[in-house]
Amino acid sequence: MKLNSGHLTFCTNIYAGESWEAHFAVLKASFPVLKAQLSPGSPMGIGLRLSNLASTELLENDNLSVFKQWLQDEGGYVFTMNGFPYGGFHHTRVKDQVHAPDWTTDDRVNYTLRLADILSQLLPEDMDGGISTSPLSYKPWFTDAEARENATATATANIIKVAKGLQQIQEQTGRLIHLDIEPEPDGFLESGPEFIHWYENVLLPAGNNENLIKKHINLCYDVCHFAIGYEPHTAIISELNDKGIKIGKIQISAALKAKLSASTTERTSILDQLSRFDEPTYLHQVIARKNDGTLMRYPDLADALAEGGDLSVEEWRAHFHVPIFVEDMGLIQSTQSDITEVLSLQKRAPFTAHLEVETYTWEVLPTALKAPLNDSIIRELAWVKTLLEY
Image (tube, rainbow, N blue to C red; front, side, top):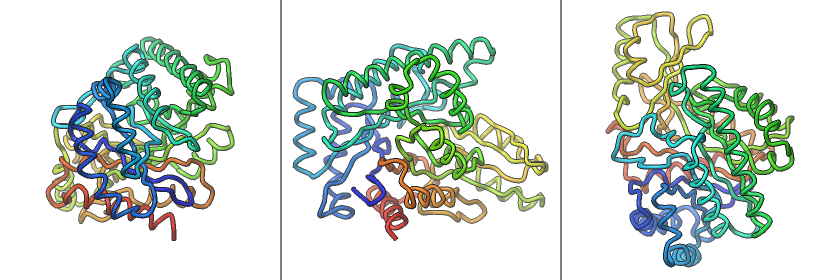
């Protein structure tokens, strides 16, 4: 839906089903319900997530024209896509495979260009479009420095191929589409400083065309991911603006946060509550802050829980997208205040037109946080709308 500070939507990676038929079926069942509650009198946007399989199926027969007609009939429009997860994302063990195939592969290039082709045919005439994607690759897959450097070079070259493909789409269709790189803990690019360093010192020199790169390669600002790293949102957003590096999309999401007590009894209770989020589907990286301010990284929540007795650690932040309208969960909290900070900056001086709520973990949440899916989506979007409009 169109707000004063941008277009607000939700990401359809919340839905299970990897085929286009399954995905379209759940959209037809849920979207009219959501729109009737959230945007009854005006069009409502969709943040479309397509697996590789669904993206190929959507371009078969007349599937795309049928979808376009459905969007028109229902008052929907697509302006942003999630091109991070390539394969299965529900009812399977995802973990580090969410990064596969990574940006060193032709499969990732072809998939992304296919999404861009689809988006160019769905995008409203007066809007730019964005596709969020993975932060090149996953650091633990490359323990050797030379191998990681070579992988970064290959991934960067493939990103530039896509930028050129997006330029061709704009020349042929008039549609401006940008690729939005999404930093994540343990990704090749996992923080604001790492992204900026790569962009200025690797991507721009390799691309040899600053206008092309800055137009078509942007940042996806996933608030959860930046909050996990204790990053200073205001300073990062200001630096990006000063350097002319665009933010293509804000992904509005919240992480887990826990203040770890020095009391053994209280600490045990806090860790017990955190352990309820240790589930086998997704990666739940943890960044711990020690008493001296230094940070420690754990690849998954189970690894952090195994060292939960370390009294030099005072706080954990875990990559588990929890409902954004919840801040206090008893002994643990969420990083909701980070969302409030980022959206206050967006409200005051908009730096992107794309706002996407991305809580995809409804099926694996502890029982106490679960609610009917449509009700949860409505509540999240209404919470953001209130924050931005008042």
